[in-house]
Image (cartoon, rainbow, N blue to C red; front, top):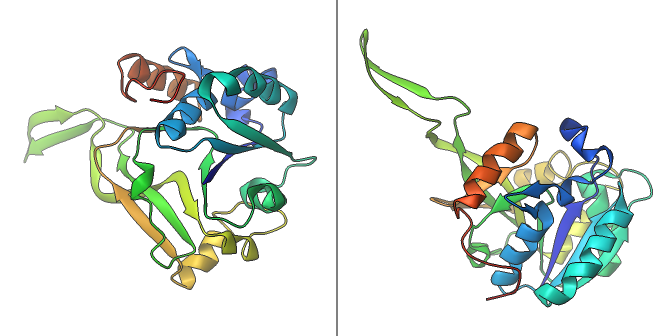
Length: 234
């Protein structure tokens, strides 16, 4: 099975860090984001990758050429000449992805969720869901008496898209030429009950959207939040 990494965005919210470096190459915990992703997926048994590039594509391609041998993986590249959005980028890569079931992951996600739990079960796409964590600390009180503080707890009953998907090749019939997959294909699949959600409890997950995210995730990863994968497959 192939894994597709969506790595073509500008990373505008991380400027000026992304003015000369694409977001997937920003270091988190001493390693580029894409290295953590490749190690995670390689650890899950995936060794064939398709990297969807656009902004500063040459730097991503050069980096991949250096680490493919270390991780014992194969990687193809599909280039966006103009921004296509996540849905358009996947559609643009149809020939390289092929006709088999495949993984797709957003290029700014760090996680250790178990890929093998993603099952289609007749759906077109299985979407990994992770619990929503409050961005703020929660104050617990009994009437007017404050009893304790919970630091950024998970909000029970609320789930978010983890940016990791198992997709049937039939997904290409739903993908737009240009546009984000969340606003186009997924809306249609949900209406037709062809989008399956797989809930993950007690896993690490962090998207990198800001400098604060970089700092928080770096602290987490240095403390071993993702496990000891190393640069080569276990």
